[in-house]
Image (cartoon, rainbow, N blue to C red; front, side):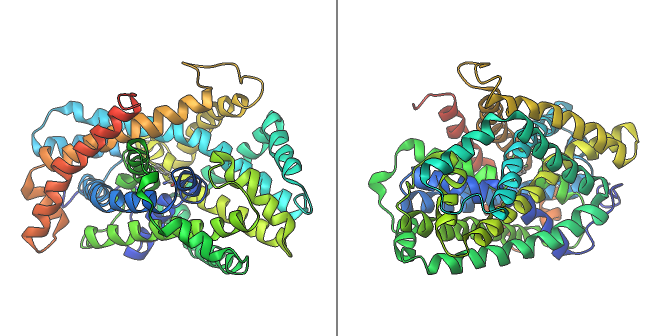
Length: 454
Ligand code: PFF
């Protein structure tokens, strides 16, 4: 049945197109904004090693599972799960897993777009020379001003959402594929340029040492779990983004090899971002562990004080916007694909509706930093609540069930046929990781976010 099942959304034109798109989804604010600051907060090298192990042992097997399920089901995650459940003769409730993903993507995009909007605002700031010669306090004030202004944030949030939906509306080959073809290579070139700059700062080796010389005394139970949670977020796992991209993957392409390539590219970008950022941080005497504000509150100080800094600042924030855009399109694609299938409406219409709803919810994040900063749920602002709910609860939960579905519910003969690994031992290894190791690891993340270990 699955063999003859064609995606109504058309397919990627080549394996390379899929690699670009899935890498575009994986590489985003998570790599360039989040990875450096959590690495900074968790002491560097040892944290990086644990994160790498998590990507390899948990992330890659689940990524293979998601891509494989998408390609076999050939539809939006919700309907893919319906198809696969039928094929396996399993309980139909599994399709709610698709819903969990659609809702998580919608929630994540609502705040992701606001942060991407900050990056857009910083492109303009860099271009107009706002950082030049500014002190740390003045740079801090620049960021505080942005946070205090709902109008400016709404403007950039709107620009980002319109750009995202314009790309998604053009469909698999017209929009998604063309966009990432241009975004991904541009991103690599810009990152290499920044790394080249980092080499001239005088603190390059110090930066490398921080990132790669492990000091396990810095590691706590919480940082192991943070590293593992980040492996999910950075690889876009647990919500169907990779599953829906997998559904556009033509038959006959090796899922395992392709996935390893994508996870490798994602990891490379995160490491390159760290290699570019830490020397700049050290050379300017900035604080590695300054938290989520790291790039917005501290890097502009460096950009403002270096020769040609406006250009490096401009390149850096352009890069961040590009990376965010190619992730954003995958965050909303499961919802748009489902709307098209379920209501039989045009992609454009689905985009307008979904885009508007996401934009509306994003206002909650914008106001979290100003007018509604005292609106809290269990002490967390709207933004913090959305972030907690998605990154800490929904993605791990989604990943847990996806792993169980691929490993325990799908029939071995079906997953084996779809993966076509050639070597049975490799298949057995994947099945073991996805059936036991990954769910157990996710369970630990889950206990952690419920506060069991804190
Ligand atoms: N992987 C993206 C990043 O690192 O920024 C974020 C993301 C995209 C998470 C898509 C989840 C997702 F489904």
